[in-house]
Amino acid sequence: MHIDLNAFFVTCETMRDPSLKGKPVIVGHAGRSGIVSTCSYEARAFGVHSGQPTFQALKLCPDAIIVEPHFHDYEVYSRSFFSYVRRYTQTIEVASIDECYADMTKALSGVKDVVAYLRKMQFDLKNETGLSCSIGIAPTKWLAKMASDMKKPMGLVFLRRRDIPKILYPMPIESFWGIGKKTAPYLRSVGIDTIGDLAKATERDDPLLQRELGKFYSTVKDWVAGRGSDIVNTEEWDPKSVGVSETLMYDSKGYAEIQKTLHDICLEVSRRAKKEGKVGRGVTLHVKDTAFKLHSKASTFDAPTDDPETLFSRVSALYKANYEDMEVRLIGVTLEKLGVLAHEEVQMSLWNYEQYEEMDKTKLLIAELNRKLDKPSIIRGSEAKKGKKDA
Image 1 (cartoon, one colour):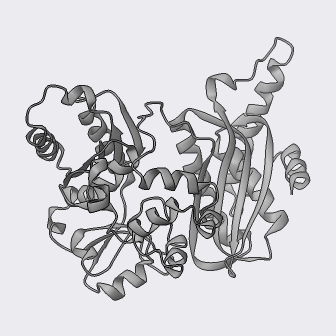
Image 2: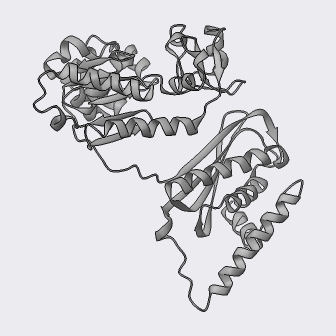
Image 3: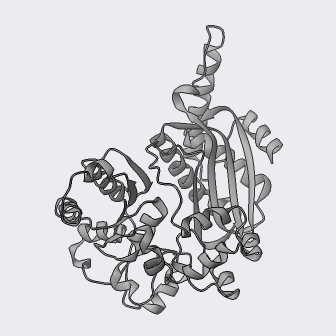
């Protein structure tokens, strides 16, 4: 079973402000760099969709109300959602903040009226949390995902293998979950307009299709034939990196113009790393210029860290050494080579304890001095040397 919360961010914002209910709402940021995170069904009726630039969305729906996201609230509601599902089964796989796969084999064993049972599950969730969901039930995870997308909001769709030709094959190729926006136009250009057309192409092992899809081809072939994974992975997600990027309000040049944004990004990267209980041995600075070309420079720490000031001093050095004279429109920082904090603790012997204590004192002193400066620029000599070498 795939369970997908309907217009999750919008629902959370409506609970914060009930006056938004029934109106065309866009959750995202205004301005030239704003992107639609999600939108209400009222806004979708005008052609607004996730990932769309906000200015384009406003052309389609001038009366749309733009609401800044409140991610902390979303996390709280998300935890409530997963806790609710675990009342029915402990075998769930978190797919994102607002969706999951659930193995309901045991839960539905012996249930005479499955539809009534699942409808009650939906309405009880809505009554308890205010969240509505769509449910797809199928023999594989991909089919369940496709089924949950077929009817929103509050949909309940069963998709059996025998129903695939009748229900799935007539659907447009763009609705195939897993095929991106760039691949769909190519498929249409070679006569593959529906999922059924794709199924026929895989039956004859079309060489053009194999070349276009590459390694993904065998997976697609299984999916459209009703095969594929039905294993619900209950392992918790283990991030390999933590990254945050931000598009600047204006094209900016020079460290002074991006300094505050860079510091805010480092604070957020640190917050997310601490939340996951992770520390990183490396950091990468990402810069996108006004021609939309992405540039990256990486650096490695002597010891793993999640400290925001350590991140800030290192990426600041990278920026000054490489991008001081570049006009930029986006800045990003990624903490990499992550490890669990408990596993990465420095083993301090009797002989080097004072050395590490002194390093901490130095770090605190530098942070305090930088806070008092209009243009923070003090770092340890070892960090400046390291940043220059890695650049």
